Structures are given as structure tokens and as C-alpha cells.
Image (cartoon, each protein chain N blue to C red):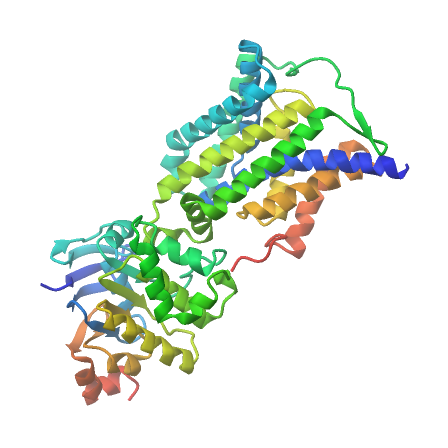
Length: 235
Length: 288
């Protein structure tokens, strides 16, 4: 049974559909990457899975349980968390408070343990735990955002363009951190503009165009496919 | 005028500033969490003041004993208004909520007038003898107002900084969507926002009535300086509201040394407009 299964989803935000029958599956422990041209509906597909975009037709299931059009706060309880591309930290809250908000649903002793794990992955956050998230650099904010999403101990973490706007060095580090998180048993589903770098670490990749799947397969196979390279990865 | 006169005006300014601060914190919290300007906030202050009067007259209790009762009653009134009216409008444009709150302001004021009449009332008649400190006359009520405000603001600070709900409130004020996807129960945060906003408004209303008198329009007349204070501090930021309240209060009272007291609202309005032009994000930092 797949961790996340998206079947023939149609939908979007308003009257006109952005997704036209998109499919997706994430197996436990995998890194799955969605790539494709601008306006292909990559982010919308991920948002539809998390209840942030409307699914008009089709089905979304998490661990075999149907979650189509549930609210995000209901979905996060099941063990799936989401990092938006922008506005993904609480700027006036300290780093530690941001992490606490990620664990808002939990009242058990595991919260402190989970925070230690986040600080292990992002040692910089431990140094700056009292600093307001709004006063940090873009790369550091991305760490806070990912740390917040890790606090619920998710089985699957969704990342919307985690390296957008970051310098090549920070982008590289972010991919390293994502692999680190994945090694701890957390499955990753992400949308990325840096398609080559992302596919290089992906167990499974999907190429989306015009709201439906065009190609799918292990990340390295997609990278090696000359047609995909030419059409979607800029040669 | 001599120095003592200016100090006297400063003391009045601090008293008015304390009252404005308590009102402005509520306006700022509600704007931050719910995203609309709550025009009935001044009249919620009046509800608090009259709730206290009901206990003072009805049970013959002293005002300090009526105080917690009035805070609780006003918190309940705020919550009922939210759950019966504003909650149904949450998905509409903020301007619809704003206009609805304007209507609610009229309703509250009329109900107060129906029940208590439109004449001036006081909690206790008679004159309080002032104490002279360095040429500045201070009445016992003044100490209660300023001291009470400091205690309430300190309690609010502890709540916002150190409780789970307080932090969730600040988080939601920063970013509602992110709060929702973090699993924060936003309806619960809204309920607590009204409880706090209502209770602080009641305290402001009671302090205002102690300093002046009770009248059904007492709160309505405070709405402009309260909004000026909230905007000066950067609306949506409760800590800014404290600074804003003090600046507006002191500026209004000090201005009477130079201009007729009739211009006091103009001072508040002028400062608000000036602030919107030169630093629209408010005194306390910029929102990122």
C-alpha cells in the first residue's frame, strides 16, 4: 500500500481546473520529485493532496484512507506535513516558538525529543533558538520552516520549491538536509525548479505538463532520458 | 505655565494612555487574528462600565469587587456577538465584518440607553481628595487606573509569551494559513481573542468611568483615539498598542497646554495620519 496515492485528480482553485487527471504515488521512505514547466500544476497537485486546492474529481488517499478534500488541519493529524514555498515561518515568533507551533497538536513528552532531532539536523537553529524567525536569512528561514513541519513526526513531508530564491550553495545544503531527513525514515514529496539536482536524489520522479502526467520513473532514468532533458530540464 | 503644570498634564496623559492602551490591545489583537477593524470595541468598553455599575448599584458592592464580574460579563458578551454574528461572516470580505461591527456598536449603545437611560452616572458620588506629590495632584483613583493597567498588561504579556494558547495567538496573527497547516485550532484561538479583547475593553471602560462618568456614548467617543493608538503601534501588534496608547494619551493631554481641549480628537487623528504617511507599519518594527 502506498503512503500517498493520488488517482486521476481534476481540480484547482476556482472555476477552471488546473489539474486534468494527475496521478501520483509515494511509497514509505521514498523521495519523490515533481518537475515540469511553469504553470504545469506542480504546486497545485501537491496542494490538492494536502487539502489546500480543491479536488473536483478523483481520489487522494493516505495510508489507504481516503483524504480527498479534507482540511489541512485534519490531514496534518494523520502524519503528513507541508512546507509552503513562501511565508512559511511565523516572523515575530522565535525559532523555538516556531517549532513549538509545529507540534501544536501534540502534548506528549515526544515534543522535546523531536525538537532535539530538529536541532541535530539543523544545528544552526539550536544556536539561534531565541532569535525571531523574521530576522533570519532566506536559507535559515527555510530551515525553520522545515523544522516546524518535522515537529509533528510526519511520515510524509511535502516541500513546495524548497530551494527557490536560495543561492546555489544554500540550495545544495538544503538538498543535503532533505536527504538527511529522508534517511530518518520520513518520505519526501517535493516540487522543484532545480529539476536536475532534485531528480538526482529522487527515488521516483514525475514530469507534469498541462495538469497531467507526461512521464514517470526513477529519478536517474528521467535524468538520462534525452527527450525529457530536452523538453523539461533545459537540455 | 510652570513645570508642575506640565507634570500635571503628563499625569493625565498617562492615565488616558493607560485606558487607551487597554482598548487598543483588543483592537489590535482582533485585527491581527480576524483581519477586520472592530468598530464596536468602544461600545464594548461601555458594556463593561455599565456591567460594573449594575453590580455596584444592584448589590451595593464596591467598584473593585464588581471589577472581575464586569470583565467576565463583557468577555461573555463579546463571545456571544462573535459566535452569533461575526462567525457567520468569516468567509466574507473584511469590509462586511467592519460594517457589521458598526451596526453592533449601535445596538450595544441603544441597549445600554434602554436599560440605564441617557443621563450621566457615577460609581460613587463625592469628591476624592488629591494627594500632592511635587506639586502634582494625584487622586487615589488615578493610582488604581495606572496600577491596574500595568497589572493587566503584565498578565497579558505572560499569557502571550509563555502559554501554548498565547503563542498560538501570536502565530495566527503572523500568518493564518501557516497556523492552519500547522494544525492550530483557529476557532479556539478566535474564542480566546474575544475573551481577552472583551475583558480588556471592560477594564478600559471601568477605568474611564472612574476617571470621568458613565454615559451610553462614552465608549463610542473613545473609538478614534483607540484606533489611532492601535495604528500608531502597528495594527495587529499588541505590544505596539501599548506604545501607541501611551503616545496618543500623553499627546492629547499635553496639547491642552497650547490648544483648546476641543482639539484633543484632532491631535489623535493628526498623529494617526502622520504615522500612516511616514511609517505605515507602526512604531514597533516592520511586518515581514
